Image (cartoon, rainbow, N blue to C red; front, side, top):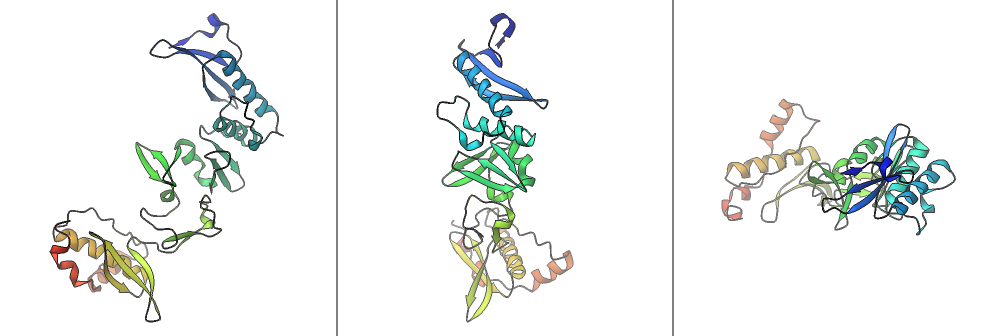
Length: 274
């Protein structure tokens, strides 16, 4: 429940509110370019007004940068990024995003900055990024979606084997900085007898070699065939299936039929007790 500002005669940019337990607190906000921008909640009216004053200063002084953040400021760092982005780019994001030429920066902190292609601005503007165990996730409809999925890298892909950051910066997720080494689930590039081959591996109760193939499309189809075979034999596991856009339906079926997979997959004792 909010209390009338007129009755309280609050300082500019400040609104009073009450928690369910009856505790009074103060909200700060402002409007710019037709956008209502929340500046956070504070225990005192003075702090809420200070946050409002700091935000107004950021909006009106283009010489102030994101990294000029001072320890005695009450405006949260995330809000600072939002305000400066509105000032410089006239686009509002509730999340700490700053738009640069052909890219966006997502500020996890003043020192931890993720880089993405600019076409992901609207997605990350509405999906907050979190970090767990060194990995970045976006909150999406109640789920935590690996940020790598948003840039074309599949779940369970291994850095160095399936993809790599070209410039060595693991916070730079721009497409120009990502090299996809293995495009398909279960496919790994190997050298065997002096030849470059693609090995298909499927996880049962450990990694199981399905076979070695001349090219990645054949290896990807082999993975699908192995997954189908295992499910048909009774393994209740929801395997991912590779989507191979390069092959039309007829070509896919012909290749699928011709591919040989390891006969060991038919030994049910290796997986039925998993």
